[in-house]
Length: 183
Length: 274
Image (cartoon, chains in turn brown, yellow):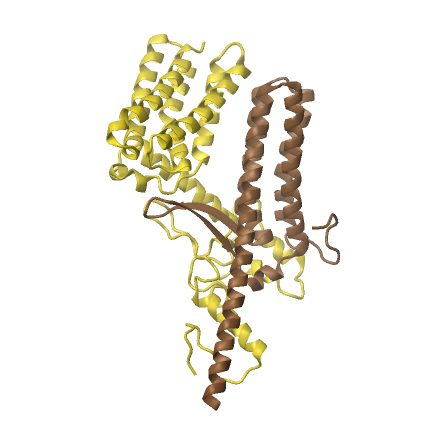
């Protein structure tokens, strides 16, 4: 992963990228700036957590699908067990995904979580338990998305590998069979 | 020429690369092996629309299309999406409904309807209550999240002093309480899924939210006591079947008592706020 966006192409989905970034940035900005201007903790809490929750929903349901073609959720199957489901586009579409989009997606995800961790450390130093609560909620949401999408990406890679080896195996088998049938 | 693979090879002579490409396309169409099907619709909720919106795929085709065509696909979250062009399914993802390419508005509607249906299942009498595992199959945490925030806001509004502390305490109490109650059930050897239980306890807060709103609007002590006791009983009745079926019958009281205790303490918080 490099620090610079891949050159040579534009964002394929600029609106989605914008929304992906805007709620995260708004939550962080509101939290940081509100300490200077607003004295009311309740408003800070509700607005920050609401923005973080909106961001969680947007990343999970919209930008994850559109920017990197991944989706994850949890289901309870008939036996009453909890199953984590991962869904990804097939390999062709995944390979065609815009590189800049996915660079932005992953980097902003990590950066936002890192920013919340830094803010949490500040809160700890100042011993502000209630602000720590806000940061705790936002951090939980960010980390949930990171873990979910990372697992989904690994799962997608695994599926591609499986499929590739399956394809190769079936090609080899059919080649051998055709060789024998010719002979 | 036959082989054990389910996908038939084309009989015509093609280069190897073409054959592999057609294999990819064919198995994408036929198979759940490479693309997981979206979750099957279950009775109490809206069905997943089968839409693969083609601009989404088109935006990735080389040569890169003009940005306007990919822009039109991506609506803002609150605004409804323009209706997508006819399904691309025949050559894309086959007959399996695929939530990866549905319009954003569909996702919003699906999530909202899930919240409403979960609420109805948990809080109101319905035939599924006998089988709790099936009732909250589609757990989600959005409902509980909104209820906890709303309850905190209502309590904070009613408080005349220390509003921030009231809100923070209410939120932390409810969130931590739900987690601890779930752990309690799990440690008692119960069979319940962590998030399902969190979701359930959150949805059962709905009556107390109603009670808090009533208390917020009218300041009569008698009315408050009545409203809170009624909604408290309603909450406990809502939570009872799920919690009790999750544990061993001999330990039912051990699992239910803390739930009741938490709701009673929230009730007291509502009454005592002035």
